Image (cartoon, rainbow, N blue to C red; front, side, top):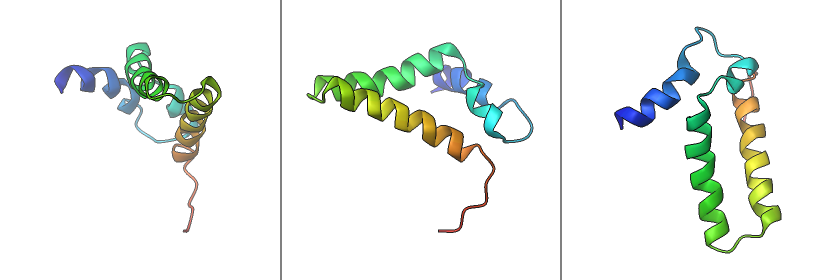
Length: 73
């Protein structure tokens, strides 16, 4: 969707991927993406703690992905 890409595209403006890029986001991208996930979890009955944990995990995963660390699995 072109509208959603305009929001998320802000995240892809920097030329090099690094941990600081994880924080480069349009505020509506955060609200739409995280809001959809957290609202869905809450509506299907997950506890507030579980919804919070999912949000924290998502944030931590974003920093890990953008940390530019070579991880061999």
